[in-house]
Length: 394
Image (cartoon, rainbow, N blue to C red):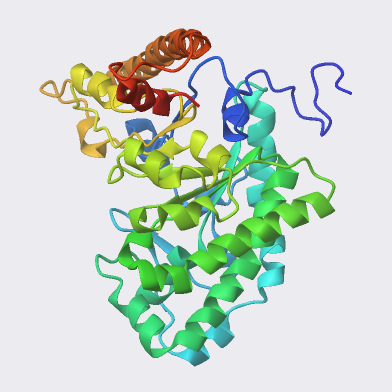
C-alpha cells in the first residue's frame, strides 16, 4: 500500500507509467517516446564540468556514473577524449583470463552505481520510469580483446575462430557478472532493463547464433529468475542488437519484452517477420531513429509517418547529436533550444498519428463487423482489399 506519495520500496509514486505499460504489451493512451543518448556529452556545460576532472573520477560519484562492469572485473579502463573507453592491457592469450576477478564479486565492486540509481530514482520524483542498462557479453568481450573501439573487430573475431573454448569461457564469465549487476540495478530502483549488443553487426548469423545469442538468452532467463527469488517486482527487459537484423526472429524468442530495431530495419517488414512468434514483444517494438540536429522538421514528420498503425505502441528514439554543432559561433543556428524544439516536434507527430490510426482502426473494425454480419461477399466484391487492410488491425 502506498502512502504519502511513496511506493512500496520507499520511492516516490510513479506518475507516468505509459512506457512501462507499453513495454508489458498493454494498451496506452498515447505513444511513449524514449529519447536515448541524452547523457549531455554534447553540451558545452558538460564539457566544462569534464575539464575539471577525468571521466572516471566523475563517474565514481553517485551523482553521475556510468556502467563499468569491465573495470570491476579487473580490467584497467581509461576514457580517452574523442575515442571512448580504452584498455591499456587487453586480453591477448587464453592465460590472460586468469587476470579477471571472480564475476560473482563484480556487483559488490559497483556499489556506487547502485547508489546513483537510487539517487536518480528519488530525484525523478515519479515523473518518468528509470531504465537500467548494461552491455551484452559479446559487446563487452570485443572491448576487452580489441582494447577499445574497432571498425573490424578482427582481434575479437580471431578469438572466436581460433580460441572457441576460451571465447565461450570469457562469455560465461561476463554473463555471470552481468546477472547480479542487472538484478542489483532493479533492487536499487531501476524499473526496466536494457541490454545493448552494440556490436552484433560484426557477426554473421552463424557466429551470432553461436557466440552471442545463447548468452543474451541466458541473461534474460537468469535475471528474471533472480529478480523473482529476491522478491522484487518484475521489470520489462529490452534487447537492442545493433545491425542484428539477420536475427530478428531469434531475438523475438530470447525472453525479452521489447526488441529494439535500428535504422537498417523497416518496421513493417519486422512486423511480418515476427508475426506469430512473440506478439507482445513485437507489439511493443522499439526502434532507434537516428536524427541529427540539422534534420529538417519535414524530415522528422516523414520519419514518423513510416511507422504505420497501432502494432507498435512503444517508440524508442535514438536521437544522436553532433557535439560540434552545439557551439556559440554566430554562424551556428543549432542550439539547445532547437534540439528541444525538434524533440517536441517528434513527440507531437507521434501523438497525432497515434490518435489518427486509433480512430481509423476503430472505424475500420466497425465497418468489417458490419460487413461480416451481412454475410459473405459476392464474387464481384473486392474481398482482397478488406483482407489486406485487416492486416493492420491487431
